[in-house]
Length: 490
Image (cartoon, rainbow, N blue to C red; front, side, top):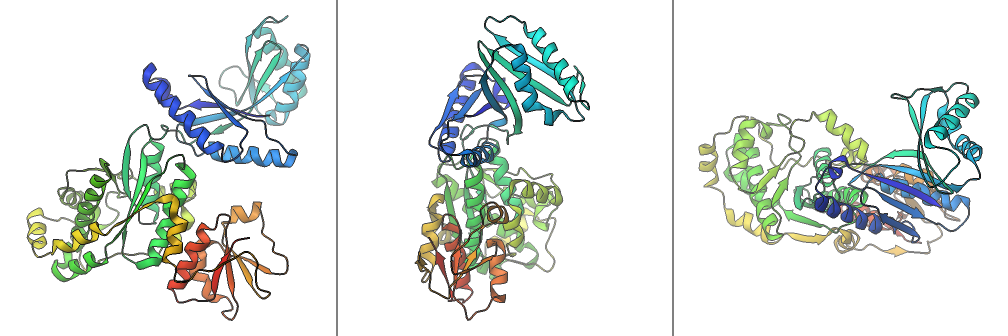
């Protein structure tokens, strides 16, 4: 039996009874939605002040361990879970039997550490909770020479619960992502570019319990969109797959062309951001969303000075949230690494849209308004009206639609080479072998730049677990003119 005790975010615990009940119900539903995808035997129990997850997984020891690891991975990425304890339940005969079981679990963890024992007991026993703590603590201290008892602020707390004839041990504590469960704090529309900033900003909104939809301004064609969809899909799938969200794509190339033709050079960047905010506000309103999210940070680029942000914000009454406003670039990159978004972000090319020779850092609203009088706003309206509004779960379908000809094969030709485009963690844990065929491990975030270095006389078949990223990457390669690429779906 695999067991976890879920600890709620402290801010949930201090809410009123009705709010707390709603939050725990949301978390319960989200846990079921996500964890049942790992194993159909998962059970989630809501105990008001905490939740428990149990899974009586079938199969041998290795398959059960795989399920356990997968459950831990998913629990670490569910908003509202601040921490979770891996539990172990068993029967016992007497106090010494309890000690022996505790020693078997905790001895390796106690090496060179201070510790204390805490026992919570219910039922009739021949010993009290304090007696159990002293007996078990003393025994651990004798059997682990490098360990030392310390009652205040120890390195490790051995937490035990004795319920009648059942011993419940905390085997290991794990950190969750914290925050509030989705969608306890309404919806937002995040402007996503595929880079570090927008990915981290989106993650932070999800962590706060905000169902985060994605808005993309396309400046670089199908390849640009394919890359950004990968990022949006990654953030959604890893941190908010309990709820479906929208991915909106707006072709902004005609808007950029208008800016280049009508706006003074120094004001181009500010005007581009104003046009994006106008468009974002309209899209948000059409979706019933009350706030826009950006990855802007003070002083990072010329358009992100206080003066310029002030001018940009005047274009809309929609609330604009900037969770990274005070963060340094390296702090943002570190956070992107932590959430697993850095590999895609660093592989994304820059699509600046407009590049001013001397961009202003102190835009004046009157000058901007005078410049915008030369702009043909019908171009902006056309871009918004023709925006693609997609369910993010149909990323694979959209990739298929954009491809000119993406063939998929379950049986490969004799001379075919398989490109395993999964990330390094996936290929390390589950290497791909295809009888009679060469397999090249080339992560999707390096494929676009390194495919050209392969022998172009060969036919290549991209592989990933679900077939989503392989089709997306096939789109990118076809846009670059490569015709010797297809998808392998065994």
